[in-house]
Length: 335
Image 1 (cartoon, rainbow, N blue to C red):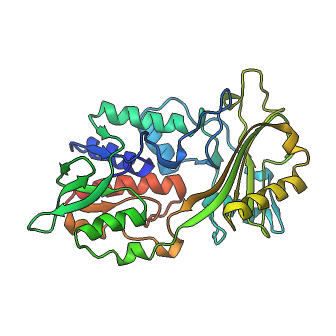
Image 2 (image 1 turned 90 degrees about the horizontal axis):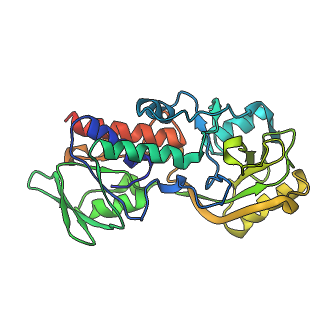
Image 3 (image 1 turned 90 degrees about the vertical axis):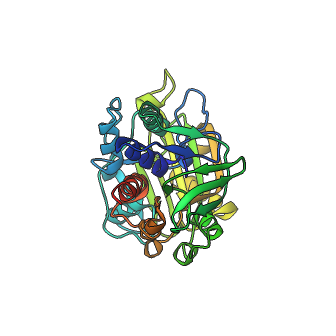
């Protein structure tokens, strides 16, 4: 259930282990929140995304024999902390959390944007026989006499199954589990963190010589992800900026205003350089707080496994999605 990173990772692992797999997706496309919107000649990711070198996501791409996606290492040494030291800024970037511990990792900007990574996963899944159904809304679950899942009720029909990976956020997952009269106390306790975000393609380098900023007071994090393969044909990495900013302290107009005020004060003239600009008042960054994450085995006796960044894993962000998805699949296949 769910065609984002966690769901695709689970589907691929299940198929590798010999299962017949159907991915139920409520939207028209796969990829969840990392899909790229059309930005003309620019490759402008929706949101701030970096890949961790040697993390589960990169390792999965290697196993899928994806074309080279690493590109160059993002220059974290030039990420500047405002009102804090640079190490603190790197820790926040690595986890996208203000309560981050010491988690700084080497980050890379994937070649071709995040959609290229998702497309490789989709292609691999299809080659392995994974099937997909789109614009399909799950309404409930049915259990058999042994209290194990036997079907998913959708807006179209009932889809029979022997096991289920719920690779969707806590709230919709809880709603489905409640339909089968299963306790959802731990999922109900998950608290979403929503943020405001701004993505922009700029015909200039207002952040030079830095690769990014983190402002402790406002919670604004902004980085430059420009790379030659993401720019128009005549664009130069030395002359263009792919700016991604989030307000970790606030969403809505308050969050967007905080981002703009910070850019006005630290990236002089950025407004006059905008080629493409995309503002998002509210987007879910984390489905739960760190101490609210749940065990993916919570419903394993019902032949249901959980996956996503709200599931306990030693990893963060996209790596957590991939790691939890693969582990959910293995949990079900090993029972």
